[in-house]
Length: 204
Image 1 (cartoon, helix red, strand yellow):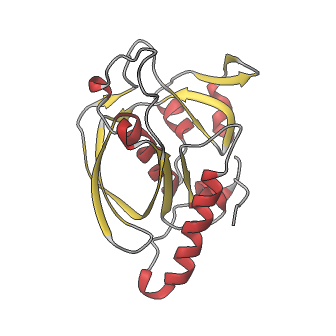
Image 2 (image 1 turned 135 degrees about the horizontal axis):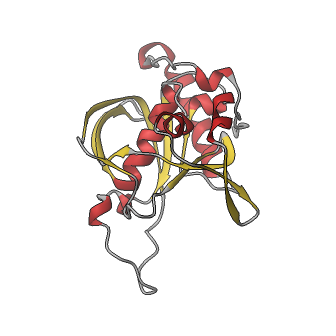
């Protein structure tokens, strides 16, 4: 069932989520996963590329991504695009239960172009965007909705989304990094992005 997405400030978004137990709560976990996937896949204006259970009201360690597998490449390895390039490929909906970050890069990235950092946004913080330093890659262990174990290395933008959603399970918002590293924060007004006082994020 499609759920409403919580917005800041909401204490659920700041609470650390607990692991799910497939042996005790298999049917409930499958319902959680289905609700999360439906909510993410049907989200429009704006569309989402990731969503976590805390964002739909439950502090359990599950998140989903909706991304083309083809973008799981290092920022430095992404080729320049031209009009003849395929957009990115078809997005695939993937759900991660009890994810654990096993390993990370030593390096951080703001995106493929250091001079023009990617601006992260969040469905729980509408219209607000900011640059965030992320690991260039992470190695993640997780369970599928069928409770099978998986492990993968996620690079570039795909890895950025994984880290963003994992943070939600820890009660961390992307704006925390903006404050920590004294980075700019922006608000979208129509089609125009305007810089705003980053201290507004302290209320989130």
